[in-house]
Length: 435
Image (cartoon, rainbow, N blue to C red; front, side, top):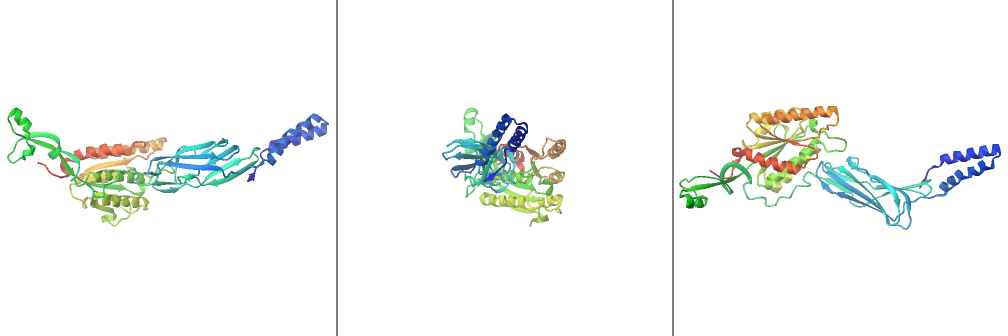
């Protein structure tokens, strides 16, 4: 227990009134001097202690989150004792790596027996494991002259785990036996009606439009939406220029990019397609110093891809790697019909030059750009204009662009975008069957 000199003003007032009353021989002033002395005496004899019957609980929701996800933390302190705590303060000590987005980890009040005080705040998840330190509780005595402080380890949640695949649905261990479920505009074999054409000799009887034949007396063949499989290469920009965050304690653009790539590749793998992963800007064992995971499918490929992306986030960038050279090397590692998805915040011109190179090679291209540029300053607004100009350059060159704004659910953005991209790919993907 620590004791604080709280009534300094009362001491000064008592001395002053006593001195003046003694000099003037004024009994009223001498009597008045006893009033502040009473406060000083009361504060001197008061005591304070943090009772053992103080229950502290913490809830972290969700306990496992992807980078950039707001996480709600609720700390409750309940007075399970039989005496009133006139002045209780509590501070939930937040891991220094995390930023508080909303609310405050501090609270306090007077607690009657059975009452509780609750503090609620929101932090922003970033990749890694973060242990919350014990909460700090402070109790003041009745006279506020004595203060007791203690650290209490709350029951409940003590850790926040942030993973790239935190909210990705699991893949079946057996994978999907179908060749793929992305639709192309070209007709062929399938189950969903696409169109009809004139009957040709040798067309399967199961594809003849018998209903139309009964009405019109002419044979025609039914075309269905053709299901195809694609090879998609996710290219993560992990250069030093991309390791920028929107603010202290926020995830970097590389962390957000790794999360976006994880969500997108999980969707494609679940539909029976193949994915590959490349990382530019760090030292790797692949051609041109690339970090390279060859195309593959199924749950094992997803595990390998997540490991590659996680290692890229944790690895220091290599200043001597030329992204343009790595982009040229990447073109020779996959078939001509493979599609490229570049994940980059577009904070400089190097990613745009990579996209332009792939355009010269005739590649299907998509640019997924996490927005981490703050727009509440003049310099931030200027950088935001430059970033959007780079997005426009990529789009003008034939690439599909995805501007992932802060606060926008990533799942909705990806689901809509990759469905459209698959249809645009059309003949550029390997056909699973058709005319």
